Amino acid sequence: MKQFLDQFHLPIKDSLFMERVAFALAEKSIRGYNGGNWKSEIVEDVRILMIPESDTGLYTFRGTYADTTTDRLTASAAFTYILVNHVWHMLNGRLNEQQNDAFHTQFFDIRNMVYADDATHCINTNDFFAITD
Image 1 (cartoon, rainbow, N blue to C red):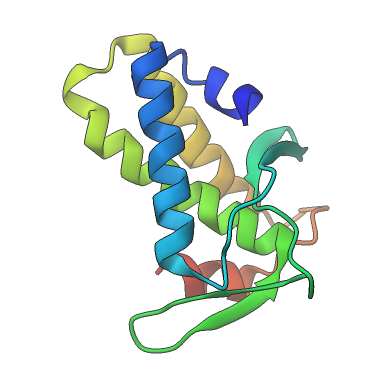
Image 2 (cartoon, helix red, strand yellow):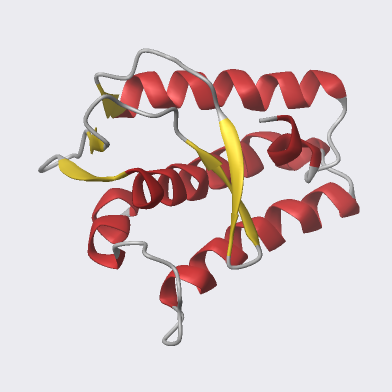
């Protein structure tokens, strides 16, 4: 998780805050989440936070109208997108220009990667949008 957090150039207290938000968000939004080893992975030049591996390889996100069950990569990309947006807005009043640019870049890089017509990733776009809508 450190490599993922380091890309935002946050002071240690804000990095720890983002880490706590990630754990709380996972616990709230992913059915059956019970912790584990968080790592990051680069997908098409975008670093995403990988949800710890589950026994089944599937992850179910609680939804307002319906739950969405998907693979680890799709779940992790959607989770990262939501986390970055959430923390970006929570810290917005205290971010310097470099930090704000890092959140902006990360957020839009994930979105653009998923939207790309010539994508080589295996992210399930239907599931991604069902989770992030």
